Length: 388
Ligand SMILES: Nc1ccn([C@@H]2O[C@H](COP(=O)(O)OP(=O)(O)OP(=O)(O)O)[C@@H](O)[C@H]2O)c(=O)n1
Ligand SMILES: C[C@](O)(CO)[C@H](O)COP(=O)(O)O
Image (cartoon, rainbow, N blue to C red; front, top):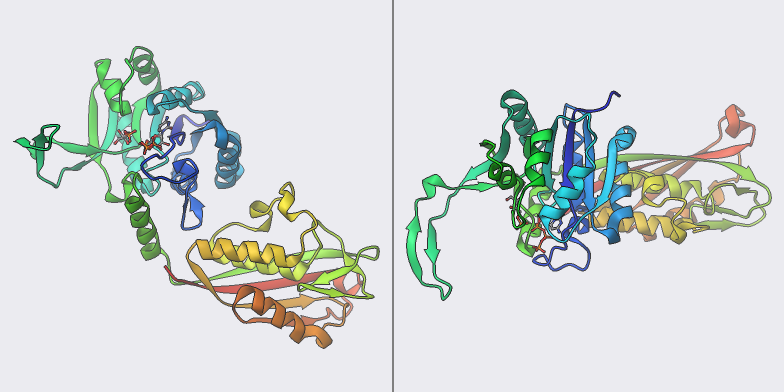
């Protein structure tokens, strides 16, 4: 991919005092994913490729890096993570400094506006490119606005037809924005005011109700409800896992220990059934896969039994607002002889997942690597039901 000429700076370094969670706001979960991840997903569906700069708190720099690279996938080379400052304005400055020089248009976006639809980004970019001005999404004010005194008395009303509420992303020609930011006084609460203070024109395009800033616990609940409504009630997923036999290892399969059988090689205990089921659950919930969720560098999962992975995957799926309807597994292997313990495996997995799990097994009639008794394959499907 040639170097993008668009950059998006996502500011995610705020603490979220008004939301009141232990972790910084951008890392608070919303339907199983962080606010930051939701925000980035909507940026990576932009038609125009963009260089992404995420501005994170020092404490969550590595977490931001993991999230951004997971969402960016093959575009990860165009991701930069920087550490933010004490105010939003300082965080934006840190982000802008990291934007590559090949960029000509920059968008500045709040991670807290996690559900901002992609078309708002597109409207802003299009207008900056067309007119070379600063562009901000805006919505009309719908409430009556009054000027009040510090002790709560109403002084007068303000003509709301002249007012708008301002959202992000806010877009600018990069060079002009950098020059404006270099001479800006502190205390700006958005980027358009930095740009306008240097004498540049700023225009509005239509904002979107879904681009609201998650600020209070009520906002988070509203975001959860919006996602629940958008989510289809039923989802299916598929998972496949293959492991080679390793005579020096004990066999753990379907959560059970199989004495006198050759084990399976692999990270953790090589339980291909449990791993395929995890992938099916995560895939159905749109939560990635076992490798990206429970990486080999995560000490919780070194040498972990299948049940540990299944319990962790189930927790993620439930946090994302789903219940498991059922899981089906097909094992393809010459050994172990499965029939004698099938019911035991089904009972154990069903108990772990709180839903029926059925397991079937077949050989491959001597064909392929399973036929040559080199390894075992497990294929699983999962059906989930949205509950929130
Ligand atoms: N020092 C800061 C302050 C804010 N932000 C980011 O700017 C956006 C808008 O700020 P706001 O929602 O007000 O976030 P907080 O400052 O975290 O919230 P609060 O005022 O409740 O503490 C958020 O995405 C936030 O992460 C930032 O990157 N650096
Ligand atoms: C940039 C912004 O989201 C536009 O509405 C807003 O100004 C951020 O202000 P905050 O005081 O940092 O929440």
